[in-house]
Image (cartoon, rainbow, N blue to C red; front, side):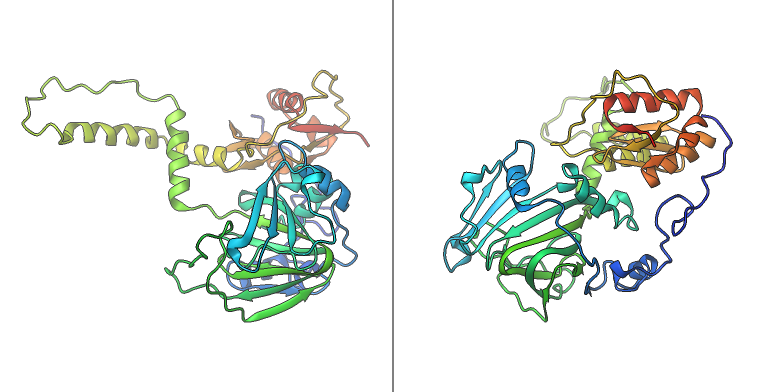
Length: 401
């Protein structure tokens, strides 16, 4: 790709790459800067911020949320307390048409809708406030609507979460994580993973605009205080070593490798037919080592995995046949996942080698999720053609002033 062109000038209150200034104090984090928050609290201890988001409004109204839960391709769950014991609870998965939801006045039920940021622009915008954490860790924005006393019971999450109260009130009881190496004990027979032993040490009621950050494995129990309670959860995935290794190996195996077949012309007759031949084990080890011999193979596979869209994500190519407007800026679609490393640019599970000016501009697009018309015109012909293909696929869109 082409060489040249410096990054765009810094906008007021923004970092050089067009994103937030991580060293500036913000009400969202209780007067901490993102840099200070990451150092003091991230994966370490909870943080309660009163009025982190003054005047916050729900990303969508209750009727629209209920309609969304009834659509195909939307991940939704209905949790109801059918009795006093955890085993009495009931969980139903979507689609959930309105007739499947209980009356608003009935206590003890909760509607959970995952991936709200994929369907509602306001939810995507809410999630963007947390981009001081790498996008590679970002999962989604979930919304929870609850009737009086609604909740899902005491539980732990294996990920970081920001709980933003956007409507009504919710009481949160929080317990420290168990000692390292001690697995949580769940209630047997319950339809949800509920903690059997829950000993909260913190207890807060959150009002609209309040926010609570919880690191992984901190026990918590959120219960609606009154009705019409809506909480948004910005969740950040924490890859498990075994799962990530499995995905990497699968991705690496998809690359075209050495087509050589195992041969054993010197294999003698054996009296131990169940024993695996050492030569076959060596052949397998060499096959794996050949995949990893390329120093770019592992970073490439990792980037593709981290930007792979979720299974229920699809893109609209409605502007695919429209003529390109070189005077228009470009904006990534909210559903697009884009990342980069020192040698590659990754978009929605695909990888591209990038260098020089084109790489710097692609990095700007990934960081700011926006590329100005001036920056767009500075792209090489090859890079411009590539962005045209992404536009046709619905991965990004033109934006006119």
